[in-house]
Length: 162
Picture 1 (cartoon, rainbow, N blue to C red):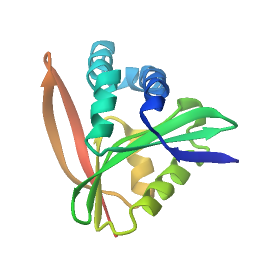
Picture 2: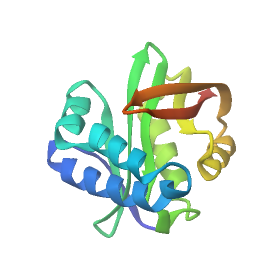
Picture 3: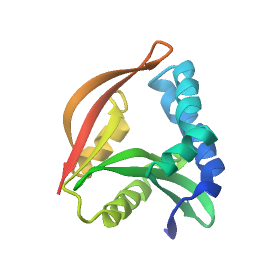
């Protein structure tokens, strides 16, 4: 499989937003309501929000095959040696193809000095949780975060130690 992974920039905001809407609407309907999906997409994937995230130091990457975007991720530095994966998504049609593993390995190469890498994953997202377990992540703790309009993120905080 000939994949290209490259750093995204402000010109890629529409592509990231498109992928987010496609992936979230295909994957999350069995986990959270359409109302919550729409709310979270509006909150986290508007052009303004994505631009702000990039300007705050979140590093975004796009993964594509033959110039067709299949996924994206972003991470940011919390403190020296500690990083947070803010976003990590691969098109549902490409799940179980190895793209996620290649993308995660690429991220790890970008931050060779990491001591810990954390991420949040919905507690009902069994597919992703199992993927992260296979990649060496463990569950650090659970949390429920109110995000507005009566919606909550009911997540695991997962961590990978070097």
